[in-house]
Image 1: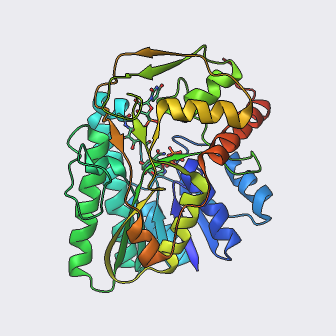
Image 2: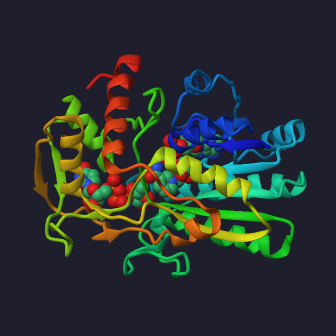
Length: 337
Ligand code: NAD
Ligand code: UD1
């Protein structure tokens, strides 16, 4: 199939492009480079031996999208393009609503206009809010904690409404848990600007000496050791999940959790990272981060039963691959502390 990937030079998008190419699909990337670099296209080529087509374009630009759709007539779309920083979304909500909602609307309009019936959307476990774990796809949407999460819940509703009146249209809503790790080559991975918001990139920067110590946000949660529990999933497993979801797409709305089904606490992840890489991660415990929940992990039986997909890579591999990327990324990009 010929697959249009919005946000394809980003963290999850780039890994998914690699898996799509490895599975024999053609890839067209559309990215405005708001949070990624054009050189990622070279790296995807270096890994796969195939160069995806690349357009530097904004997914909210209806004219640009129309031209790309009419030129390439894709068979399917994976829509990763979006802004994703929770704190920033609280500070500049309109930028988040504009970008995340409008890009989804524009890309879906192009799909309908050009007869593209397979649409896969990047949603998030954040739409579950604070409910009893594990999270099942049938649970109600409770994302009213920040504008970022709200855009995901709103896009899910928009896409479901569109599918309801377009019987040929297939919408797959993939709810990611906590993607971490990187491709084995060390060529692509997660490279946040500035001080990372998320745990794994923070740990790798502490390991490298860029940051002094990890701040553990609270150790008084009702969890195994008092620290927050999350369902970390290797980004390559996540990427493979997209290929399967796309290949198995059928009309209507299909929702899948993409996680491992296992929870890992902050301190367990620190320990796993130390053991996997033979390093020490200094940390201290501070206040809880506002908006955080105690536990978040998936029930993954639906993806297993209906897609035949399960996450294969364990936490040790996630830690080793994240660390390998952190080391090679610094050499290639000469990032300063
Ligand atoms: P990312 O920032 O690395 O990738 C997103 C890409 O989209 C970037 O390359 C950015 O330049 C591009 N982009 C943003 N707005 C655009 C626009 N209007 N037009 C064209 N390109 C645009 O983020 P990621 O971690 O790869 O996340 C991909 C998707 O998955 C996002 O929608 C995100 O909200 C969602 N998601 C991510 C996580 C996570 O932990 N990383 C968890 C759940 C859901
Ligand atoms: C965050 C986002 C969520 C998004 C998800 C995946 C917030 C409030 N939520 O969730 O919307 O879908 O990332 O991108 O930002 N932690 C520390 N110290 C740190 C960083 C994190 O102790 O420096 C802890 C957190 O309290 C949490 C765990 O580590 O218990 C994981 O945090 P993080 O990686 O930010 O992911 P989420 O909180 O799950």
